[in-house]
Length: 404
Image (cartoon, rainbow, N blue to C red):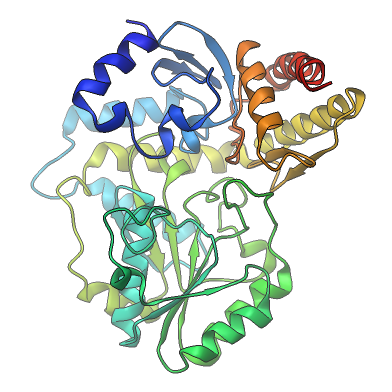
């Protein structure tokens, strides 16, 4: 069944044929919608085309598809049971691993999606403080619940009424936002770096991170790090740990289980009682297979220094792309951590150049994205990146020929 045939069938039974951030209708025309399989750092679409993949299923695949240690752990647990009348022992083991790995974690609660985790973290903060307002960076993505979805369709203004926005990396803006709702701030929620779609990424300024921590302490609010996208690709201990900044609550998902569905909130002892008060649950939140996969994923990243492997591959990719763009006469911006990179073309306000280039990359077997950040995995070897750079070089040449 081809991609085109599957799209036609889907149109009859799925609203619009596809929805959400995986909707290929939002990308350049050549992007496939349906995929057949993945192995290591490669994926094959429904038409059988092979790609060296730098989206890693939009972040979840951190060790590579079908990683043997993860698959073995998942299969071993599946043979015992997955969705049971209560969690398996693996829940306790995974929580213990998170507490041992993450300095700011004294406990862990589990769910399925990043949105679950960010929403749950804010519930804990409100339960602990008895307050309502949340300070959030303008344009930041924290999930798809009504309070945070990028699209207002199906939501009401009341569902966003308790959000107060500030400018990322501006401590002055953050302080001003807090002052407008003085005495009623339950939480400051912030991503480890600015990774808004359609914009160059922006690493956090250490002074801002430390200032956010100090402000939260001063006003008695919870500092919440949304590590859903960046978690386990910058630092296993938490993405702000290198700055000496520890949050009260952290939301995790994506790379946590190498593609198996799971999310978590970790928090400090001071918030344990508030977390206990929550009625927050789901029929599949405690399924054991994903928990076994998560434990194996985190242990493998730890034991093999997987983040360092991603950093090496990401640095090789960044340096190669810079040299290629320069040789073909393009000025590019490469932003974000090398493990979670993005490339934009200078002066490309409508993304027409990026769309053409990523479409050309696809034709040469390299899966990149024109307006969303990319992801490296520990499965990307030096040889894989070198092969990908052959494709991106041809794409630069074709894009220069097209635009003159």
